Length: 143
Image 1: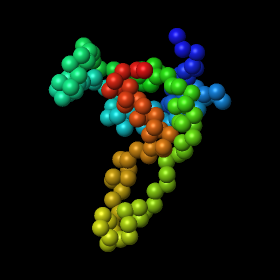
Image 2 (image 1 turned 30 degrees about the horizontal axis):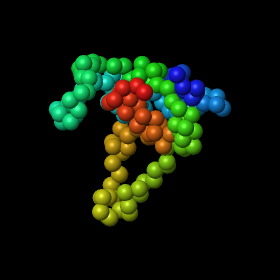
Image 3 (image 1 turned 90 degrees about the horizontal axis):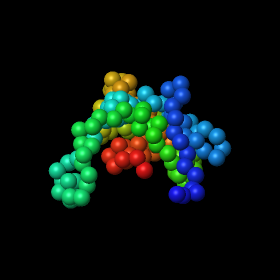
Image 4 (image 1 turned 135 degrees about the vertical axis):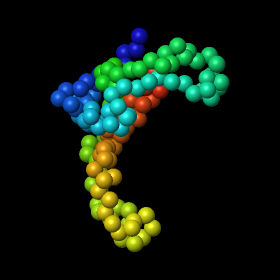
């Protein structure tokens, strides 16, 4: 058994927190994570290519559906990951009306399309890093 500390993850009042040596670290909204992952559950699946490349892979859990929030609660993190997470900005980078370039430039017709902006989840670098690890866990199991 390792003496290396692991830090737990929990959800409180709709916000994901990761424990840290300095106390709870706010990561972001659980609703944003659920929206980013396409819903509140995840079905475990293995592509034929993965199974062919890794014949020793245990695929008994294929077809199992797991709850995203349950997976978040089950996650633990190394101190190094927590320090990296804490170093990331907790807010999304502000966007501007001309983010696609000046009106008339390639990629911008000059007209505002607010429907896409309304449907977009703003993701801070901190939340993005966390979701990346969550996806890795969903794809390969909790470490």
